[in-house]
Length: 125
Image (tube, rainbow, N blue to C red; front, side, top):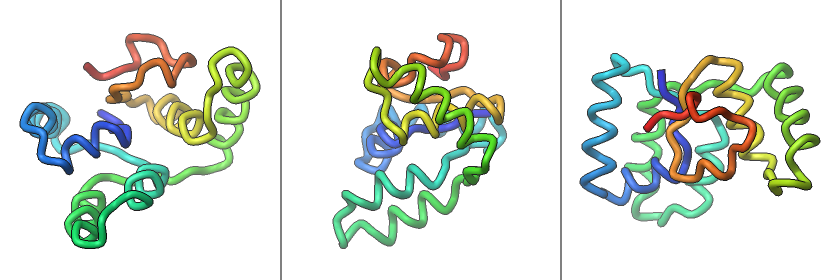
């Protein structure tokens, strides 16, 4: 099962052939179990053009959305406390990392440096 970070989703939405092909392969590999959180809606919709809004929302709504709960919030808080000074971890990234960890998902991102709290084995690709 795979959790897709906003940077990867943006490349897919922009029509990048490599990312679109990799995404199709991931969907097949996981039997459609591709996950995001409300954080992806925030990050992507904040920068979407009005002419692309409908298609973007349809795409995001086609994915499985994992909601943020108190367990995720607690772990994200621990990540921020532990990595804020050394790695400048942002709240969004801490929430994403906690979501993937608690739900035992592999994180697909182009920005592994944003996630010092995850082991290499916890990344997809």
